Length: 325
Ligand code: HEM
Ligand SMILES: CC(C)=CCC/C(C)=C/CC/C(C)=C/COP(=O)(O)OP(=O)(O)O
Image (cartoon, rainbow, N blue to C red):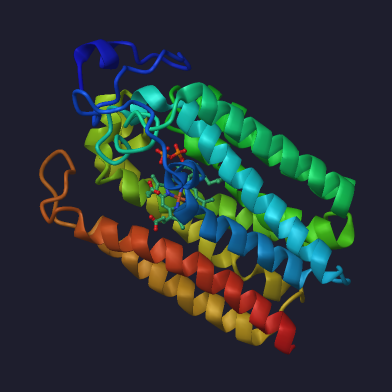
């Protein structure tokens, strides 16, 4: 990527995209869009877990919601979270063009015009909040709007390029879905959805930093102050261990407060022990004097992958426990 692009990267600065996109070939039609590009803007793979946790919040909430309204609520969470992805890709198009992991995305690759992506994201976000408010209830719509604002303004625009605590604070956006699912059924929020929020909130740093340990060069090149870039690999490993150590007892809280039965408690404990073991292996990874992995960050890659299965399994176990109990 050209120096021109990288020298423009400053906290919160939005710049015009480099035209044509890095992957556009000479003579190739620019903005040759396909429906898959619009889907890619929604970050569909990440959405799976966001939507799953929202669905579990809805399933475990006390009360009944008509299936059509339940479907509408999940649809609104899905579309709003996807819209956040599109707005994030619009704002981050300069750094996405620099990072290997993201440079093939539709905007930096020149397949979608930035303004169109922004319009798409804003329309979907507003539409899903309005639909949630009209069809389901106002509290669920307000929390949905709050999570969109958190992801777009707090995480993407304010914190991502300013502080290594970006994902700790901004990551709260991704912790809202079970609260929204719960509120869709009950019209309110109480202790249990707050515990579920806390679980995802504390899970996010080990999830992301175990990836950032090996995606480090991308972030450094793009000037994004992720923890391994700013504080090094050793400190990042320490923070991963710290958050995971807090997370595992927290996941027992649904059992401790009497919301779930022992099967969930045991499952959460076992899943947590495996997570701690994976994180221990990240700590014990062979390193050079600077803390850089000598094994190609194999343990960190394994911990990242496990973090995703872990959250699926944890929320799945909670729902099964409630439905069987
Ligand atoms: C600010 C907080 C977070 C950051 C910075 C973050 C970042 C990332 C990154 C960079 C990836 C790599 C793959 C990709 O580019 O798609 C990823 C994967 C993933 N994340 Fe996160 N994440 C965060 C929070 C969450 C939350 C809250 C969830 C859901 C509850 C989640 C679910 C996933 C899933 C399911 C994947 C795997 C996607 C795949 O299979 O490619 N993430 N995350
Ligand atoms: C409305 C609602 C329920 C919102 C949910 C928000 C949401 C999708 C949270 C997940 C967080 C996430 C994928 C961050 C990616 O960071 P990044 O965007 O910096 O990643 P990148 O480097 O891949 O662009």
